[in-house]
Amino acid sequence: MNFFDRLSNGWTLSMNSLKVLKENKQLIIFPILSGISMVLIIGSFLFFLFASTGWDIDYLQNESKFEYYLFGFLFYLVNYFVVVFFNTALIQCTRDYFNGETPSVKKGLQFSLSRLGAIFTWAVFAASVGLILRTIQENVGALGKIITGIFGIVWSIATFFVVPIIAYENLNPIQAVKRSSKMMRDKWGESLGAGFSFGLLRLVAILIICLPLFLVGLIFSPEVGIVLVCLGVFFVMAVSSAASTIFISAVYHNINGDPVAHFNDKFADNLFQPKK
Image (cartoon, rainbow, N blue to C red; front, side):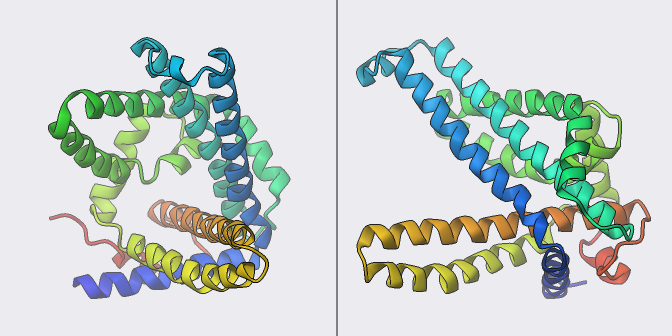
């Protein structure tokens, strides 16, 4: 299969993911809740940070490296935990849909709660990796940025299936990464054909939705236009995130031999070329 065939199949699977989301509009609540939670978390972290210094911004420049990295680790930890928690709920809802059941937001959240230990363990592991990369990037100069950039790409590929693995397989974080890497290497190769499609969809949607919103907002004031654009981008990112997670769930179940509604096995099997 050549590059353009792969992109074509990736586009088809992206459209199928959006079709699933269209038929189950309630699923978009998960990335929305995740986004709102992250805004609140960032606000809380900033409030705590400034309050702990007596609202003295200059003090932040003199904080110890230990405090700096501890704060960074906690931020990474909460960030990963929130994202994986809601993605796990969405993964479970898509599984219910693929099995012919009606997805329920409540059931999805209940399932995530039942996997709280596994989610937290993964969040600690991912936060540790993130902090190590941050430390290398900030202390090894240009070489550090190159190293972290390359590792970041490898990490994204290696952890592609981690969320459904955490959800359904009793593996520790290292085992989950190995399992995810093996699935990519043995069945799907190392190139995400659908990544381009989702990126293109996001770009087109942002232009189509946000530009008119900004122009409408300008009728009232530039501030209103900016607010409308931010809301538009948030909505587009929520839809894209939900569709992307649905795609990951579909691919995971396809690899495990489970039937997946709205996804053609031939397209799924050929989306990535196996590495030879």
